[in-house]
Image (cartoon, rainbow, N blue to C red):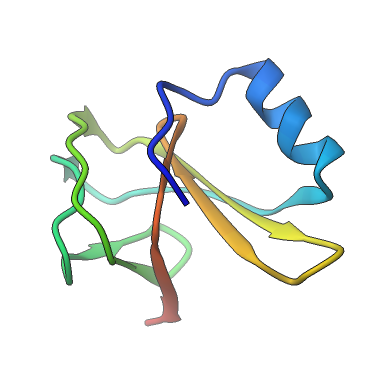
Length: 91
């Protein structure tokens, strides 16, 4: 996965054409200062997103979309419209 400039409607439409659907919509708890390798980010739905890359973004309680490919089962995570690589865990 790569960092995108932002996931607007056209980006979500592109992901949908690639077979991705929104599995879950939630918010990140507190302030988001971006990803650092291994940083644990608590989500309002009691999941935890653990970053596996570095990427800067600054937002307070941003929207988080968890997408899943119906073709491959691959998960993508969009935080405040930007795609970040990492792993989702149940808290």
